[in-house]
Length: 93
Ligand code: SF4
Image (cartoon, rainbow, N blue to C red; front, side, top):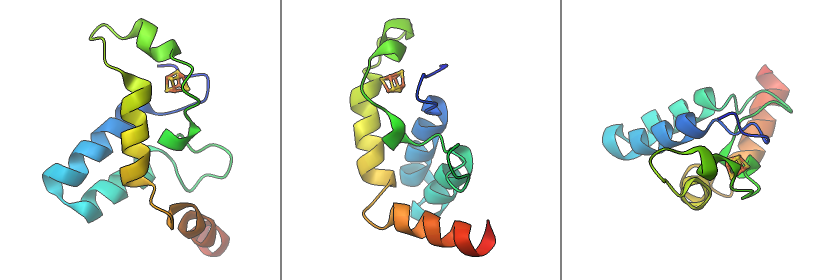
């Protein structure tokens, strides 16, 4: 952090961990809120990551952030995710 593509890196990882520690619904709710997924143009999703590696150079723990974010994206943004966010924004945004 900060990421040039506005990925909420700790928020993405926290929600991903929550999904497995506390359950699917809890993890997904945390992901949607933690990444501001319902804010058009301002979402901080794992899918924003362009694999530039800037965060990895700054990570004191040597975490392969870009690679791990791909895992988060696959898990937390299934095929229906974008469409669901658009529909929710349309009716409640
Ligand atoms: S690798 Fe991804 S998360 Fe890391 S700084 Fe680049 S765009 Fe952001």
